[in-house]
Image (cartoon, rainbow, N blue to C red; front, side, top):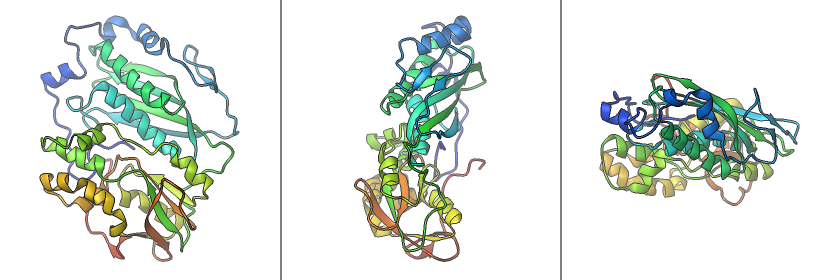
Length: 342
């Protein structure tokens, strides 16, 4: 799921006239959604796009048709709301488009599948410039295209603010899905990707702290470890999820679903801690808290019976006991991660 800030109070500040002009409302430089109308705008958004080989009917009919070679289809959906999950005075529409695809692609990856297609619904004020919607779509197509997938359909409606809803479809390629419920005592916990970067970036944006350009960028556009979900599945991963709400929160789902205790080792999280230490000091927070409770990096975390595949690093162990997640054998007393209705 997408988050605006994983470890501090959520801020959905009122959007000023300047923000609106920079983000969602026209400034006179081009036609608006109202002026173009729904179907001419859709025609613009799909013109010249190339679909993946598994798409037999793309945009233009009442529904798309895809080939499902595995006989099973993996489906996930997620929604981003302006002011809650992204800000247009921080992100460009292109950034928002990439983020919307990436967070859904990570969910497909976490099942051990590959992305095959996306369906997108977009709501925006009628006075939104058409070029801004085009930029959003371009970002989506860039991220999806890098996965060998495309956008096969969707919807375009009027809304008081920007709302982006994405449904992702995936193919398992003949392997069994990796669920949250398969972890077993004696196994090891490993991660593919990086932790704490998006949380650090959010704090830098929120507090108006300059510099740290890569971390600030990582909050706007996540970098899931594409391809590692399939790698983990083929290596026999017992359970897997993506880190969207926070490492503790998401591993908590695996612990609960599997009926086990997961213990994280701080020393094995050292690369992530060191990567955000300077930014954490500038923001006045503990770097470990960003790594443990920061979401939106969309790293993958999984449990393996023995050796982990290339591209993964060990960060903890699995044991019997009351289901939950501990840190160096102790209960973590800080924030565990994002809550949607806080």
